[in-house]
Amino acid sequence: MTLQLRYAAISDVGKVRKDNQDSGYAGPWLLAVCDGVGGAARGDLASSTAVQQLRNLDDPPEPEHTAEELVSQVAGALHRAHDRIAELVEHDPALSSTSTTATVGLFDGEQLAIGHVGDSRAYLFREQGLTQLTHDHTFVQTLIDDGRITETEARYHPHRNLILKAIDGQREAEPDLFVVPLQAGDRLMLCSDGVCGVLDDGRIADVLTGGSADYAAVELVRASLEAGSSDNVTCIVADVVEAPADDAVDPDEVAEPQLVGAAAELRRRRLFKGHRSGDTGELEPIVVDDDAEGLPAGAIPDDPLDPDIREALRYAPRSPRRFVWLRRVLVIAILAGLLWVAAAAAWSWAQRQYFVGVDGNVVTVFRGLNTSFAGIDLSTPYMRTDLAVADLPTYDARQVEQGVTQSNLTDARHYIDTLASHAGTGAE
Image (cartoon, rainbow, N blue to C red; front, side):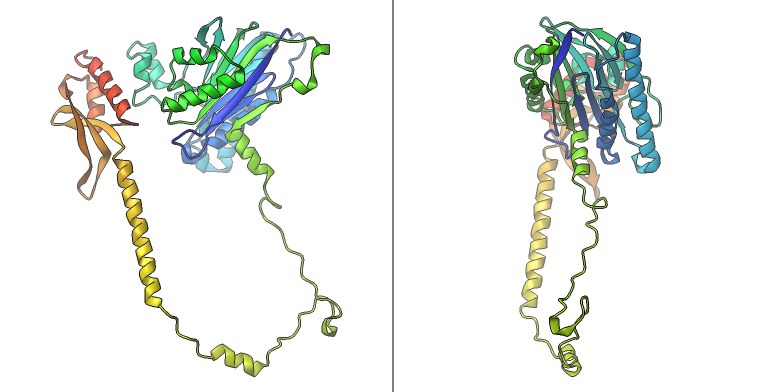
């Protein structure tokens, strides 16, 4: 073994999502990124479960092993991740919609065995050139492969998040498996689509050109968020360097494995659970002192009040409450204020939403929500184009007639440009 990895991993929940459904792991022998899918169905649980299974690969390779054996280890770990998620789904059917991508690289000192399912990616940066090692298992990738759309158009396609392969515990996904020979000076990058979905190859290469692995990982996450990523963002960068002689290794400089994202968060929650999985247990009973009024330990003293006095106090008239009407008015006013604030916030949010639809047979950008309430449309035309629906291919025309939601006005303009490039081509 002549090479080793110097790595850094970072994961950010992003600017839109409430929780992080990405998980990542970086160690001396293993790099892995998993992007959970499922939202309320606990995509975070799927990705963290997969990473916890994959991280068992992070051990020095067996002597005299072959590339086929290395690939077989990766395939076995992905299969075990599938089986573990299947167990979770069987225990809780509410998780049946959960799944995760997985991009994993197993290192042996000379080469990297890669296993890949989904749309997370692995890249190799070598001699100022960037190579995408993995191939996305997505619907838009099939359109790119068929020459129907370009890479740029794929970034704004309404079905860009449709994954064709994932680890879901129900259908065994056939992973892509292959080996990449490495050399000193190489830089590896694994990421979730929160990075590669908004940064093109040129921008990724610019970031990977200089600085340490730590710097590159942080900068890729920062650049992704600045570029408008609406997803969780996870990135692992690993530099391939010459391995020092055994007697030159400083134990204090050996990097610890890094666990990031949902896998790290869920692990912390388990570590800090209370007694009996959150139950604080029973409190010890309070013991009365033996010398207290001559009572034995543990005895409860008699009620100090005379029964007649206790009865009189029980039925004694109470003073009328003061200012009851004022309290009620204040409660109503507070509730009305909260409702007004919520309505104002909802209206403000709706005015920042855009979709591309049809107004008078003309492709138009609408501001608001693509729906109605009590017969009232919750959107208004914002920008009319000179693009007629009749000029669009059948597929695009149907999509626009139904309304295609966009993240922001810039995305809407990009989508209009894509429609314009399709107009008159006759493509279905």
